[in-house]
Image 1 (tube, one colour):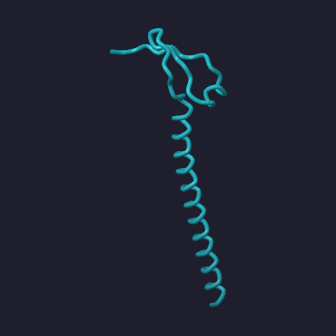
Image 2: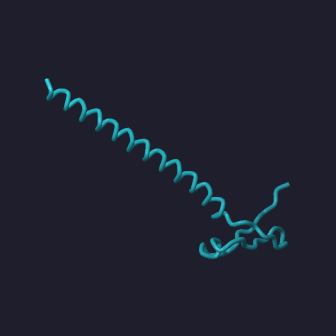
Image 3: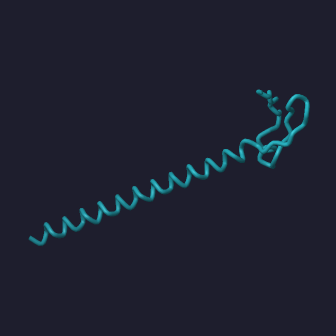
Amino acid sequence: MLQRVDKPSHSVSVLRAGAHECQIHSAPVLVLPRLQRFSITLTRRQRAKIKIILALCQHSKASSAYAQDAFLFKNRL
């Protein structure tokens, strides 16, 4: 059985405030806003991006240290 859900005409700021009411076959039902679920996903994506950036920075730092050591070793000869 498929139920048709009428989209509520709320602004984004109202959705951020909390749950909103939508109509399912003319019966008012309290539904969690989609933005709340989206924000959880967004937070996970942001954490993943931060991990990638940190890994790249550490790799760059290690490469820089290796290049510096190679330069110092070369100049000793």
